[in-house]
Length: 385
Image (cartoon, rainbow, N blue to C red; front, side, top):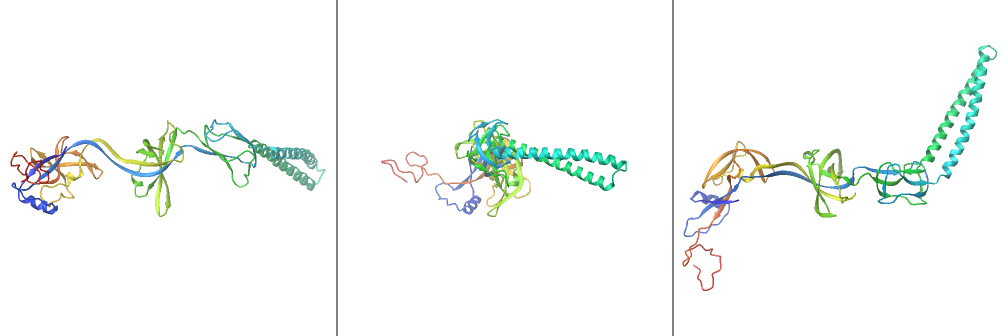
């Protein structure tokens, strides 16, 4: 609550002139009031603002490792799926033909391998008895090793064909919801150079995150664990709460503006927040509740006209004691530029001076003996003096 105390005297005219104030002379000597405010408890906070995008915490793109035509789809947009649930099937005719061919090649390689193995063991026995030349032994060994390698290769090729046939059935890797479906029945997908995306799944929309772009000038103030509030245009009257979970080191430069991504946890129990929404974010980089505060201008106030408080040295405020100002040394804490924390020196409820206010002399009313502004309209039948 603000109070006024009158200070009269010649030196105050200098302060009035310095402030560019015009005071009209009246029957009483012109003067000035100093304004006071009470020391009170409050919260001081600093914040950083940014914009970001609502995203699921876990988002998975489901693709296919084999090429083929989509024959069946078992999920669509917004479908709730479970881990291991069948989502789609590809045509398997070509994949089965490949498997059959490689199975036959494996059988042929097996027969050849078993023959060469027996032949090598026979030649080896004869060589040890000196009945065949070293050249015959080496040739038998070479044929055996080659057949073994071909057999191993054929077996790997068949395993690959079996695996590819299994890839024709697309399963969900997580419990979640389908955000997008990128294919239609009958569409051919080619996995020659990269894995084509069939579905995009979000694990749990009740747990979302905001990825905000924070300017390089502000990123030094942002730390993990800081409280965050944000709004989205879809629900302009709702304020959502969260906290900083990650400050990413990778910088992004766009139009000569450098920003850093800050990840914010965003609980979404009512499923209001949807992936892709733009969030207007406020990150509270400093927040101290229930502390003694005064306006920052109280620390700059000086009762001497034209004199400013010292920039260095002990901090001082002027406390009002029954109409008289007493200079009081205080210990300050944090500030947001408007209010400053007072750690020691004054108590809650004390009145401190924050500035001056010019006062015009009161005019007396002839008939009522009261004060009346010269700019107030005269009542009907009355006279203005």
